[in-house]
Length: 580
Image (cartoon, rainbow, N blue to C red; front, side, top):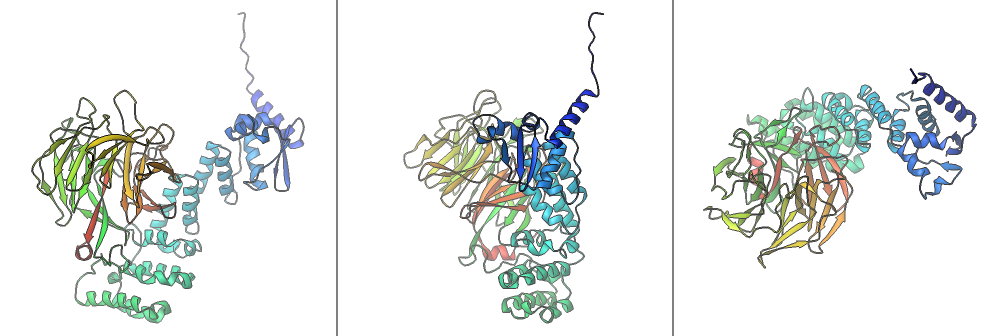
């Protein structure tokens, strides 16, 4: 034997122990990290080897690459000491007191294993006093599993959580999320009411304006009559509010009549109440729940009460990759893929919202799936997709008032599937999509003008995008899809100026979600977390006027669904339609 490959098992440990001793004594160190009044001598090579953050800091033309002392502003001295323990020893002592600070530091300096360990530790220590705060913290740091666990704990232990100090500081939107959620675990609606009153009374000068609306979604008819009788005596805010007293009186009258409360009672500030109509969002099909089961369900969302109704299911089994478009009070479900027979469909199914029923319609001329659909004027348009052999640029449309047959229309300039179409003014915009060729997608935006009767390209997306969804609100079109760099970026397109506008990204990456516009806001529903592959039960709402996102919750986790907005729904019809 002429060679001997020797390996000393203790060498690496000894090396890092020596480096650690040097770091603690300041020997052979070449940089000092200053955090507030504390200094930490370190080795640049060790920091850069462990952290992409420090690699960037110490390389290139950054000022810090030449400095002997670097100020760190984002954390406390004790957290920096813990982080250096981890860097030099691979060990970290995680406690309740230091966990959140350490997780934030691990995220900042890009230590994913340490961040995961902190999140797992927090998850084991969720209780009634911290579940709401942990949800907020987890969302800010993109710890989805931790957020979901804290949310589930809050639902399961709501009466106890409502007695915590954290509960007093939650926002109105968060409060409504829990009191309107059927999964909120309470012995009776009295516990919901007590939570509402505790929240309102904590800052009554600012919150009493919301009391009447909160009472209207508390389902007072399910509270014992004698309990309702005592409310004005126990709560001066109710006693001094004529509107709140009327809500209680109405609930007691319905109980006396032997009928259940019409739970879809609509408040005077219901969007569209004054004009007698409002808009609702429908979610159709998709893969629902933890095990991603194909679902024929149709769910309708009312913004005013944050409440979901279950509508009549899709008639067709075993189908996916269809498109939807709303025209009037009808929703057109076109094409799709037959999962059982393994073929594209030319089927068209129409849901009538007012009758809660499905009706037949003329079939498409060309079977297709992964296409897009949009309504404009008297027509529903079907665009692009895959016909089982090739991606197509073909377009066809149906006159929704005549309901006769689909007519072929001017083809697009580019064949695309998994694109999205939105109408604005007298134009149809088709955003991105997958194009012919392996792993190929486009940033092109195709625009059809009904006035000129031709297609043209307008300002492209900032990057190639597929699995696209889009919706128009406040003169802007929101576009969300999958790019090669991110799945959490939404862009706003201004069709009047032909310009793109950046907006804050979604709280975490997702794909296979859906987008709809309601009351001037953009609703991004469900999807699949691209990091964990978990199906999401969240709904994020973007308000263009505030440039902010708010998180809400769906009835269940869902991805690969489609959504549509039905406009000008009669408010009185909505009031008297029973809920599911």
